[in-house]
Image 1 (spheres, helix red, strand yellow):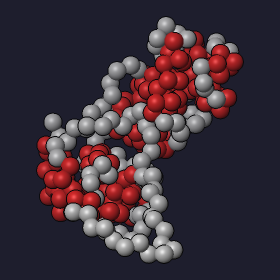
Image 2 (cartoon, rainbow, N blue to C red; image 1 turned 60 degrees about the vertical axis):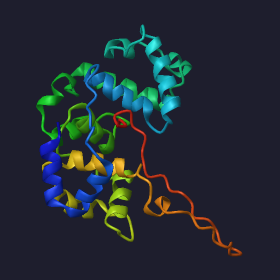
Image 3 (cartoon, one colour; image 1 turned 90 degrees about the vertical axis):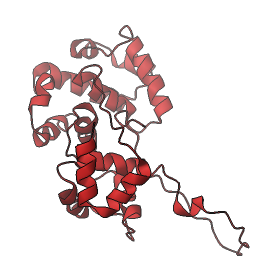
Image 4 (cartoon, rainbow, N blue to C red; image 1 turned 135 degrees about the vertical axis):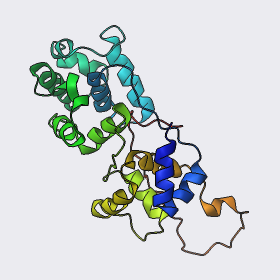
Length: 236
């Protein structure tokens, strides 16, 4: 399905080509069920929560409306205390009300977002309280299937590039633009491979382990979180 994109990425970047070989076939998928409003509301619910906790809250939220996402009118008529009762914070409730209000008024053209270009969609979505550039980019990638999105602020993408290209530090958003120039117009698939590469065993972990003598005062390195939770991102 994504063969032409993969061929382009392999030809344009030898390092990425090696990473693609290790990850294997591309299983990138979009999430097409529900409406655009459903997708953005879900993204707000999932913010800064574990997948399990967010899924539980989302199920309770949907249960208020017959096991589905409410319409903007239904959401606006729901008292704040009702939203709080299913686990939504005061802040997230405010975000959902703002999303519903902008959708109802037409300030956010939810039904025609797919007709806009990427820059216009990001501008429209980030006008909603609680929706930042990263969430808008995830919407472009995993909801609309836009092919050329590189989330330059994503910690997972930056960490994967640092490891694959043996950089001393994680690349800055400006440095990511250099990589994007090589990968265009298939930055979305490149990003997917970078995320998946973080699930691969490290090179040193594939070798037989050798027990080393402990050094007094030596501290074990701390693991650093490199992925951000998003209901848009799907595992293969």
